[in-house]
Length: 233
Ligand code: SF4
Ligand code: SF4
Image (cartoon, rainbow, N blue to C red; front, side, top):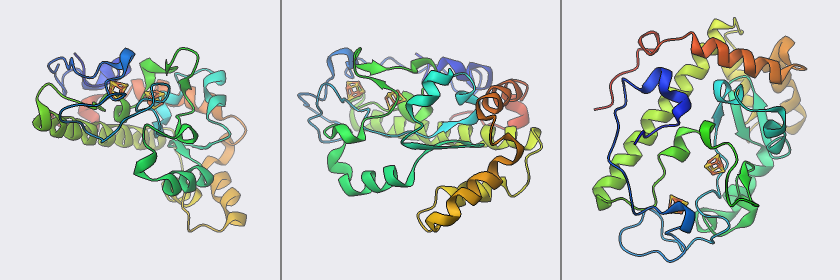
């Protein structure tokens, strides 16, 4: 079993080895509807929400594999930036207001990429590391849950490093990351937010889908060695 999306194979297959199957997280019949034993979160979760009451960061190179229709799903609730997709300020406020108690329980928090008709993720192949490494239960109990947290940290670092390297390769301004951070900061005045979004995008502002597609192609030319990715120990 790979602990990351198959789409990350080009960079991670020699850095992050297969891990034992987890059989207790029975996603089709969500194990957290009636939680028992050692669980990562207290639950219970609602079956039509599961653990997808979350708005994940998606790096630019993953967004480049999604269709325009897929990107549209998050347009109203997210901010698309050169480094990737983030929840909008309104979304961040909602997440803060509902807090951890809303996880698995509040439909307002459901991920924009969740397909309610099929009761599953609509971007499964390209879901980010935070999703592939979430296990509500582990066959190894608490030790296994701690292991998955380490995998999550590793994947977060990988995604961020590669997304930033893509921007460098595509000759983005050295201030781009600062503009991105200002665009998603609660401290930025509302009238200034568009300025930072525009500055972050530069000439790509009206051509974001093409940018993400090019970001994906650029990422595929960057090797794990070039990223100086360490082995997961
Ligand atoms: S990992 Fe998520 S979907 Fe799968 S069983 Fe656990 S809570 Fe349910
Ligand atoms: S990207 Fe997919 S797996 Fe991750 S939270 Fe959204 S719907 Fe769930």
